[in-house]
Length: 327
Image (cartoon, rainbow, N blue to C red; front, side):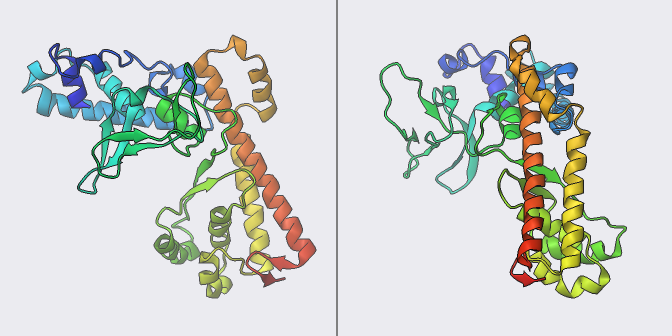
């Protein structure tokens, strides 16, 4: 980022041709949104994430101003917080993570390659096997005049919007990340939490998708409702298996209740968002992206509530719990 700012201020930079075609601003990146636009994402977590990132950037900016820029003002002409945020947005949205010749991960800017738009199923960019050039393999034939795409990866709409400033209404890779922690005030939780953390250090970041069994979600809720009399089955629960009909009933109820509470926390309903998108002509790009984000997150929540309901119905009909445990 500091290299980018320094080079932008150098009229004789050997990278001038590349620097001159970089966007001068990123109006669709959430860090550039107004407070009113960010308010449209209430319930998705994007508003809080964007504000936290901006606060962190402010602290880093102040530190660099004192420790680096003040001693080398000629290297960073026109130094400002706005330029610093611009550099972050540029690197954040246009850089590639590659593995270098020392087998180390590093972020790089690749002129021209960073101009390609994202399309699911397009080729992923990266260094060649011998690390001598950057390549993107085409996954289909292109005719003269066709737009060439690359693939930013299997990212959720939250990731796409917070990093690049766009969303996909029909995102096959979409998911929602739920934050969940066991309570330190609960004695059973203090016993279970270290064991769960050893199995899965990121257990409290749970990803849920549409039409997928929420295995990680159920594992956490089985453990969260576990009683002392059930602790002998803790290893079974850690493996993602049911431990008893009673525990399973409590876990399913708690999981559905938690998802329903998240759904109800949004200031608008799913139907309202759908109606807003039908009249999207009156909305700005940022407003539309905010509505699409919260709509797709609600759809994921609703779908998972339905999936859990169907799973419970199957348990009652088959007499068999998840993990082949008989009722």
